[in-house]
Image (cartoon, rainbow, N blue to C red; front, top):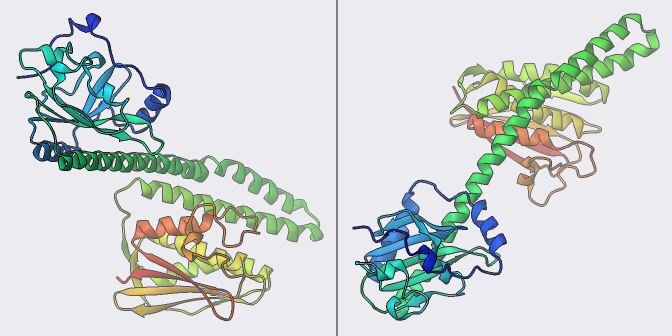
Length: 398
């Protein structure tokens, strides 16, 4: 039988006073995106434990909204929400600890509460506060009984622990929601970069090609450099579009590949930029075959070679591959500036640069990181004792 009755007594029974931080509290509550969501096992387990430990027929995870209390999990209550005027948890928001009411019929705050005056009264209440890290109260983990009673010190402490566990679950849930939303907008940005921004690039490339046909001899090298730069930007945008598309899929279509074909495609793009900087770009041929996605693997290795060429002012860049049990390991070794980071893994974060004095955005190595995750590859980086950096990519053999 439900303990929630009609609301005829609402006009005669006042709600609990609002906390001083009510506006901030409600804003915080809504930031968790938890209200009106389906039942979840992690929260159901908490109410079961609360009921067992405190030996009560009713246990709730109650979140106090502006005009109602809503139960993320309920055991024995029979409803997912009640009007705010019936809420005992709303009173608990004003308490900074576990609020225990041994007999609600003898407490002036609850004696006229419809849940207490009903045919099946709730005579006992204990609620441990759910508080954010800023101290804002959201609700309680509470237990109720139809008989007056007490809790032992151990039961009170267990209720506190369950409230902490509930907040940990809420924080985890919110973090996942934020990550999903962030990933959605990141994919959207990559899609825009990969498609919408290509139009002005094509226009610029067309204009440069037209200028070259009528340019004097002295102007041609500058126009060629500009055309090559536009080509590199266009390829980067293509990579973003490909990564955005594959991010939406469950997994990319992996297939056997000749690793040499991938390396040949990458080096074909970066050989001339290396020559322009007077760099030696060496390549050790390989006969290894790997299982991967041709476009994404070219993107991954291409960004590492691009990083090596861009950040090496003199010397050489060496690209080669070695066989290891179950894997091919591609290494990109340069004699450049090295990494200026205490934690080398940080180089793969978006918009973090290997060289803080450079003018780039640092997105290339983030693309490497995300592409490697998508392909199931592993990317490592280490500093070379003689100077420079070695990036290595482990790719499953075909």
